[in-house]
Every structure is written in structure tokens, then in C-alpha cells.
Image (cartoon, rainbow, N blue to C red; front, side):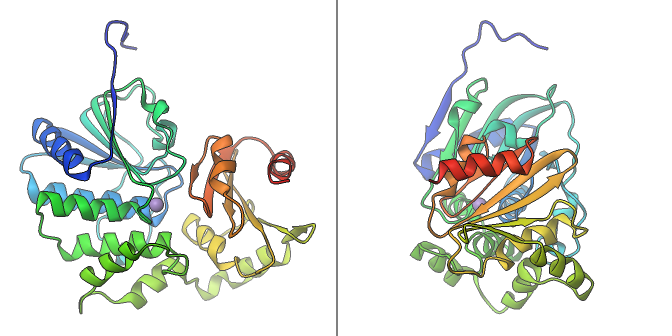
Length: 328
Ligand SMILES: [Mn+2]
């Protein structure tokens, strides 16, 4: 490993989209090899941001080698209909990049990069309340952070505006996907800005039914698995609902649909969805009453006030005990 004893790195937290984009523009121009990274356990917003930015860079800059990376990516048929390039995302990288751009990772660890990966600069674009900028302190890092944005793709939209990039149909679709996914088809939308962007981007080439199908619909073959998950739900004090998906045969994509699909009981104050990826448990939290980002941050996870997630090797029993104490 390279020793970095004589170099002090700077984290720049930029809240001005124009300045940030100009800095990004300059850095992309200086870079030959670029890696775009979506966060571990990817959701459609991080993937949409990654694909949209990929198109932006391809449209605007010539002769760049751009790789798309996600640690846990799996082949997808459903999202492919909207995100044309999603299957270009690989779970492998080269050993060196001039520039890494991380899309809403919350912290460095959630980029899922291999330990020996070297790079000159890293740019982070995020809207998660759980952003931990300290986690990037060992790198030459520039961060753009705007927690008022309801989707990370809304920031990519702003970047397009500053760069004066012509927003192609593929970019449009990726941006819309992020907004519809993070607001659950506007069900939880709070900001007029989301509506404004949709108003501007939606045209006769955009079919919202396609997005609904990709984001929220299962298939007949999933029926039995869904029933099993619902049937085994547990309720603590009638206020906390626990759904265990750890042994479910549903694909990752479909399992994450359950987190919204099963959120239909108005007197539940906290939903805990337990999932498992190899030996690591994933805990996905949803609530209309509690700030779940504070819980997930304690466990080094990421997310928002009403929807957050974290990974842990600890068994559900222990985690649930701890969460119960936290929300007392
Ligand atoms: Mn997001």
C-alpha cells in the first residue's frame, strides 16, 4: 500500500451547484479514466444517477474511458427497459482511475470499492441526511450535498443545466426514475421541485405505466413468495412491523419492492424489513413517524428521515432489541 504520510487531503463540501459543476467539469477534462459508482444494495435512484451521469459525460466529453461499477449489481430485465445501460454496470474495476464519482453513497464504505483501488480524485454527489463527510477524509474529495433534493437524480438534472447538456431521452428516463422511485411514485413527495422537474421532462416519449411496472409490480410467479413474507410478519406491541425476507427466493430487485408494497398499515410506526446478502444482514427501515435516518446512521448505514437502511453481521434479535431501545 502506498503511504500517504506527507500529503494532507482536503475535503471540499460544496453547496453551490454551479461552482461544484465547474469544478467537476474541469476535473473530468483533466481525467482520462473515470469510474462512476452507485452505492451498495443499489436502489433505482443511485442507478438512475449513475446512468444519467454516464450519458452526460459521454455526450459532453470526448475520449474518456468510463467504467460503471456497483458491488452488488445483478442482471436486471425490469430496470433495463428504462435504464438502457444498466447492464453495463460491472461488479469489477481496474486498479487505477484518475477520477471516481460516487452517487449518493452516504459514506465511503458504501461505495463498496476494493481496498487496493487507487485514484487521484473523488467527487461525491449526495442528498442523504446520513452523509458522513469525515469518511472521505483520506482522499482528495469534493462533495456536493443537498438534502432538500428528493432524489439524487434531481442533482444530476441541475448538473445538466449548468453544463448546458441537451437532456436526451435516456437521461430523462434515468432522472424521472430516480424521482419516482425515491418518492414512491410521488406518494411521499414533499418538494415542489420534484413536480417541476417531472413537468419539464415528461413528454409523449415517456410512459409512466412503464415506470410503475418496473418500480412497483411483481409477476405471477412471485405470488407464493409474497404471501409467505406477509404471513410471517411479526408485530411488536402492535406498533413495529417486522418482515423477514432473508430466506425469500425473490430477486434483490423484487425484495426491495416489498419494502413499499407491505407498507400499508397506518397504525404501524416503524417497519423493519430484514434481508440477507451472503452472511451480512440488511435492515431496511420505513416510517411515517420516526426519523429512521438517525437509527441507520448509528449502524453506519444511509438514508432519509422516512426511509433508511444499514448492513450488519448481527442477528435480527440483537438489532431489533437495540432499535426498540432507540425509539423508546
Ligand atoms: Mn436517493
